[in-house]
Length: 106
Image (cartoon, rainbow, N blue to C red):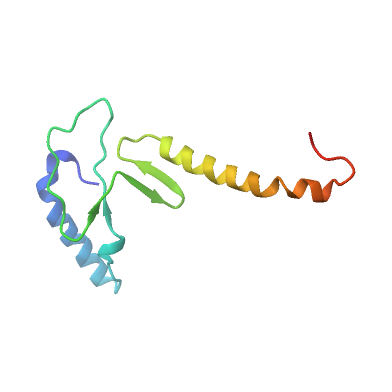
């Protein structure tokens, strides 16, 4: 997390992350690294920092199953959870007739 007032320090911070990764014998995969500029919907972004090399800029990010948006809205996460629940319920719907052959639901 880097505040907008310190955006010129982004390359330095990426250098620190790279150094930490190398020190701990890990590998940093730029194809799996994302950059997201977070702001409130009520405030317009005056200027955005230039994109980082080899890192994709995105408006949504899913971490451990939770979808974060760049405006701190939970709408994308709720839509994802609702879609998964609808898919599961649709898959279970035909099975109710197999379980309750004498008296199906409603």
